[in-house]
Image (cartoon, rainbow, N blue to C red; front, side, top):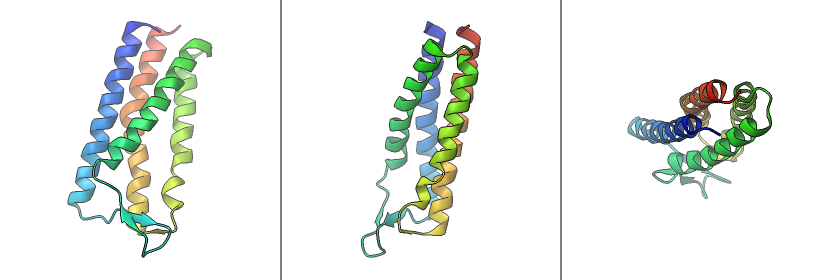
Length: 133
């Protein structure tokens, strides 16, 4: 993988982490409850910085996906974008798994996946299309 692709992936990853942190700050400032758990009695709020930590895990997965697409795919940008957006779509179900969580919290968390994906996926896709032929 070329240096420009690594640079784009690194920049997109940092942008995704920054977007996740900013989004979390806005959500907390708006007073959205971020408590979740198996029951109301056991519900605990998402820790401060939790959005960034969770995003970091998926940034690593996205990096591995970009590497795999660059190495094996005939059209790396196209392949990366399809798989990455599919993962985002599947991840929209995650906020609906905990038994106890306010409806607004479920929507805010699902929207976070789309917001971060929109910050990262197009940049990596463009870099793969431009530099991996």
